[in-house]
Amino acid sequence: SLVLPPPAQHALAQAALTYRYGEEYQPVTAAQILAPRRYEDRQDDLWSVFNRCQENLLKGGLPGRTEKGKRSHTRAVNGIDGDIRLNRALWVMAEQMQQALS
Image (cartoon, rainbow, N blue to C red; front, side, top):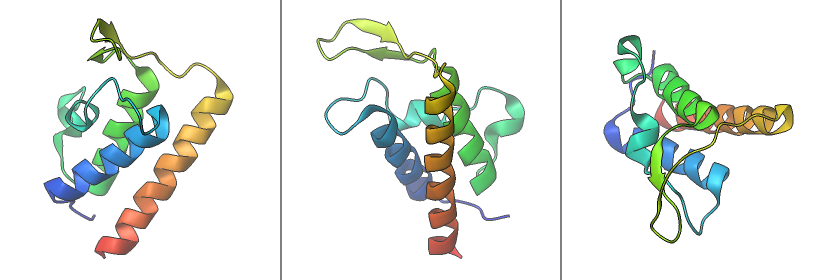
């Protein structure tokens, strides 16, 4: 499987954040999106990075800050429409990353 260097991982996470929250303000960082929730997800291949981004964006619960600086946690994606759109966008980003690096 394709191993992603850290700059490519960061680029994928940043693109996912921009898709989810827009360009103006993002309550969490790309590093938080890339953080694994379980030991098995610590690998740096494309599939593991994709899964980490997907899980952290869909489940929510990451500590962040509002635009005014108040502490908050990200919300989970509960609607099926938002879930499907986010998954499709992440999949397209991962496919483009694979084509660019292989």
